[in-house]
Image 1 (cartoon, rainbow, N blue to C red):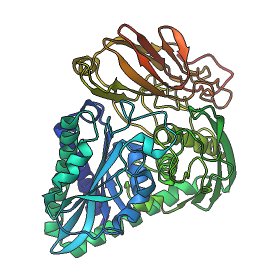
Image 2: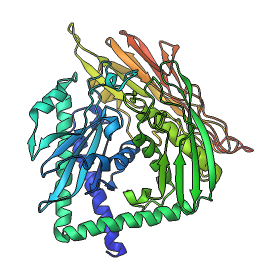
Image 3: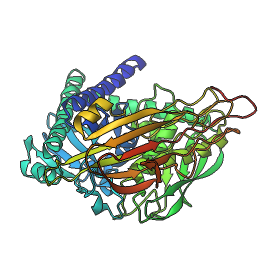
Image 4: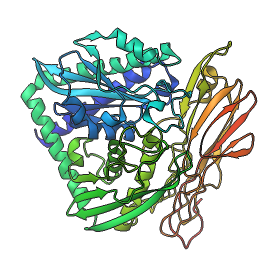
Length: 518
């Protein structure tokens, strides 16, 4: 293919992923998928290597890119199959993120796969929202190893009923799984239309050329990083079970456009649920370096070829079964980004911004039902302040880095759950001062209209988002119930009239020697 044809081919693959996402969003039942857009879609080649992805959730997509090859090679695929998986140690991230994979067969030959990953607010954990303060994986809900949900075009209804039978809202769960299967069918149809005029051989060749092109762009971009060794250590506040100041240590070894990322010195896996499998650590690393590449770089496996990753087995970012991982996917991935960016700031000062709010500020809540009280589950992540950089101040009240979800509109929240949103505002002055100020965090305040169980999994409550080049740190976040401070990670029961307030961290400032950039 010439350059124009390759660009068109790449854009058509991206469009297939976008259409899959549109189908999934519009067919889903839960606000978590339909309104917050907590899902991702991607295309892989016959070996499970990433070919294209939509601009969805970085932690979903990077982890799928890292783990898909191991998943697909252990399955005896046939046309019409779909496999479901959420096991973090077999290609997943954490249990609420459920992946559905479908092979693309053309004239009896498997040419690739489509996949989507969506966050289910209930995956069978004891605590509503399925984001518990857990100490083992089994406490976090239903564990699904790679299993065929659809066999040769026939749905395994017994398996689906077994899965939805373990969640509180089986109708919502059933609808969301149907939406995921529908998204894959749409992707398979569009890919078949793309391949028909090309032929199988040309399609496979085009994928190889696309990956080679992505590798060339990636190596060119990474060559701009001076050769050297760069190290940084950042910290998680705690694991929710009393273990504090958990180090995420990273060392970058840069040589002629190739980068080795080593997590030697990172804290051992911990009893709490801030551990993560290596696939999640890879997602965070891929994300940071992808940000240094030109915008036209294809989101394919080739762009990651110059990167290698090492982490000691049994450490926080390469946890071993049965370590709990519910918060590792959301909180530890965010801190890995901060650590890698802290190291890169030494290598390419001026190109790296200060730390952003560094937490997805996870809120899970609901009620198990009974005694006339309906069962419900709800989960959301809350934005914060973006770190400032050389080119400008940080944005206020946004999701950053490893998540890319929307907020839940208050109308949707109040229409579906016994909760009133009393306040939703910017947390003025929470961004770090500097020549460029960090972005402000958010204040989100909930009044409960019925008894509920609430779980908070939040970070940057003690270790503030750092500034750069003399800029000040952003303010740490704080959680309160009826005005009284709460720990960053806690499960509690609330009553009618109780008010939960979550104030998210601000971003770090950039530069000194000048007035605060308003």
